Image 1: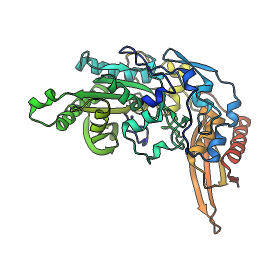
Image 2: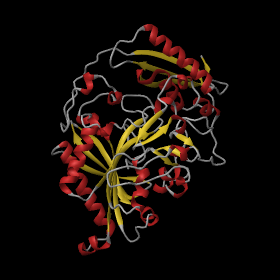
Image 3: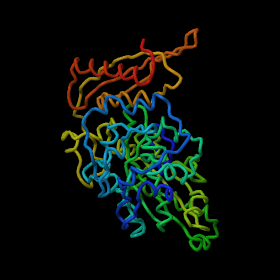
Image 4: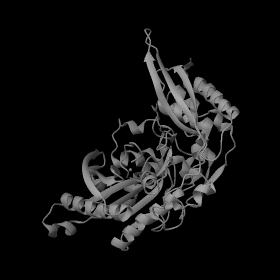
Length: 443
């Protein structure tokens, strides 16, 4: 459950959904399986409004680039047409489809896999045999699982097509690993860790990427576990949660100073964020809290209490391994991959690229439907990971009420020097796509 609101670097059904996608929780260490043939049967909900710019974005020029037609996730093949489809509510580009199934967190020599395994080791040592681990659950979930089952309000911004990748009106790419929480609780799991890739439409800079990885932890308590303590269930669970996570922070970062900050999440009450003082500054490590009773009641856990936490693997790995750019996690360059070894937590990354960025500015009069996330989707569709940053550097409104934005795009490869011809062509293509898909007027 990285608690759902994403800040600087990232920070949680099923009856209805089973009509569209078969969901099978197999043994204790394996997966929720997506069945493509059933995925194709999903029906659209009436009244789901999508802007014209959003619809047109789904058929951007990047769609013409060759991508693999099928992927294996959890032992089941998912066709491209199950994810990227000509549906008025679909906003999943090819570039996102190709990230499905890569599961960086399952690679033992990758920083994300090393970190995941280190966290698993902590729980294995301190809670021997209690926590069931899931790291192969299908990222295609229902909107009900992703939002309703974890009490995300109906008017929450995260439900917007501007923030979430919709396959159709009822089906999304999960925004957080908490999308599996209710299903696992209903299936009788009381101690579990869920790790997986999650997807959000977002800005372009060194700490944000439309695909990242989270770990969710949940522990359920029965009344006999807290009644002997003379404490109420909520207090007992909150104290156990803090003890658990303080131990995890010491396991990862050593003997660091910590502090708890009260916060708000829709699915926990009370809710907290854990911060540590690391490398001369306070760092938010994770979000957590005591699970809302409504979630437990709906899952058949009446008269019980639970805690839950969520953390972003990239956020912590960038600190522990001193990785300066989130795009590096996705590179196959041996100068990056060869620096890390199984079980070696916190090996400091040695930069291998000094290639300079190239900046290109683009100004346009925006339309009423313009959003920065849509702009970033187009830049990513054209330039891929060569787009290092998109930054608003100027805006103004004239006497006629028209608003102009000027964005600066930084292009840089982490592996080689880009030629002027390449950069100029990228910028030309971006301008064409922006004008065509976002219905803006270039200046």
